[in-house]
Length: 101
Length: 140
Image (cartoon, rainbow over all chains, first blue to last red; front, side, top):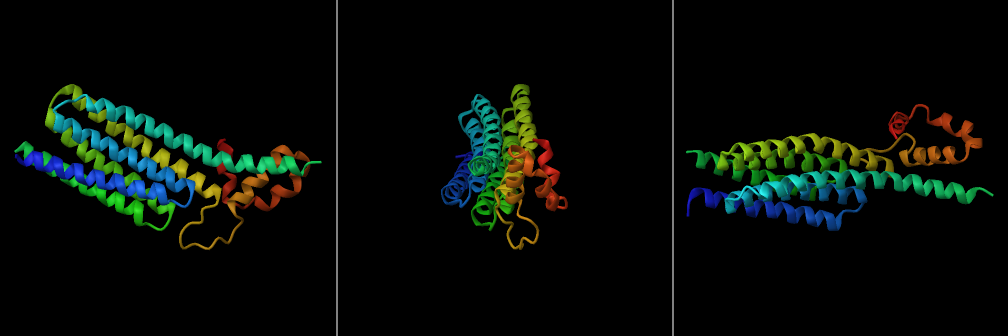
């Protein structure tokens, strides 16, 4: 068992620990922005997990997975942030429509 | 020799990722949690991907790693800004601060009401003239 194998193992364990903590925040989070932040953090952690997997499997193809995941994760974050922002306006507009005779 | 450097990069990146996880779990507020997830998370994934680039030593892999790290560095501040603005507008109170001004959700509600009800617009927009939310709404 070489030095690099041990280090990759430590990296796997620590990154998975971070993913679990972000998952806890995703489940606990009191508001919607909390959950979006936790999801963003999970994406970044899984990107580095893909890097570690590429090292362990000696296969650079996992880096393509990491690249696609980074792209999709950013899109998800932006879409959820826009959704949270629009939700308030939509609610206000509905209230205004109901007030009108 | 390069293997030892690479292992140090992996372990450092993993430990920083745990720091980011603890931050996102234990900080009191969504605005403070964002610091942990964007800054520390980007740094630790950058370190781990640098270790991957050192492992393969091929131009294609190095190009891909540079692309991923560049993309993460570009998008993390944009995403954090958008979530932070959305949280402030929804009405998440910043930790340890008493709101003394008009609540931002009331301002947004007024803006939406003005758009749909132009007749009442004159009286309602004037109290909000000194509010910091006025500049943020123009980008939409």
